[in-house]
Amino acid sequence: MNKLLDRLEEFIIGALMAIATIVIFVSVVHRYLSGYEIPVLQDWLLDMNVGWAQEFCIILFVWMAKFGAAYGVRTGIHVGVDILVNKLSGTPRAALIQAGLVCGVIFTGLIGVFGALFVWENGMAYETLSLLGRDTGDYFEGPTTPDLEWPTWMVYAAVPLGSFLMCYRFLQVMVSFARSGELPSHDHGHVEGLDEDQDENVLLEGEAISIAEDIEHASREADAKRPRQGN
Image (cartoon, one colour):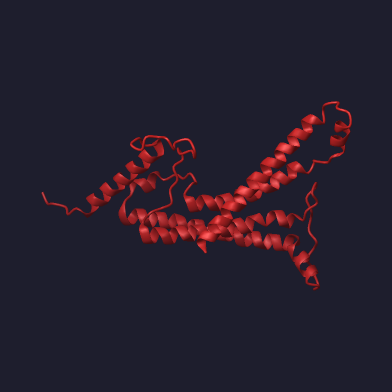
């Protein structure tokens, strides 16, 4: 189940990035070509309406950011201030990490709940009840986007969906850390496709830092377990 969710998450992010790239490229090409006085082609381009492209790409980036944030929690790609965590070892370090993860669960869970309520009251309730043929009551139809004229609740739905997914990812990391004592990590110095031919005996900067931190933690835990001798 988790593997399927992982693949779906990666597919959504990749698809959003690809669509946004294509739309932006087409929009830029259209803008430049329409400035040239080319018979027939210029008239055809000027009659083509691509004013919606900017708004559409903004919506895609909003969804991309929310699902990308959940992906970052799962893979450990988020940048964090961990100087205090790295100074600790053993139980204090584990307790501090778990406390931070709990805060992440609570924060993203609350954002998901409040975001879902906002989306529901901002037009989703009206659309759902109307579709089911029921009385809409005090719910209103909700605003639409300026260019695409899409219901804004469809755009804002990225907030609760992405936040609940982040909350689930934090819970995943909590369980994994409790079992193995390891957090997901990502080498920020690694670039796919650039180091395949690199000598395996040469460490990247990110790998060297990660190894040094692991050695430091192991050393502190060994010192903490070593019995103290009296003077």
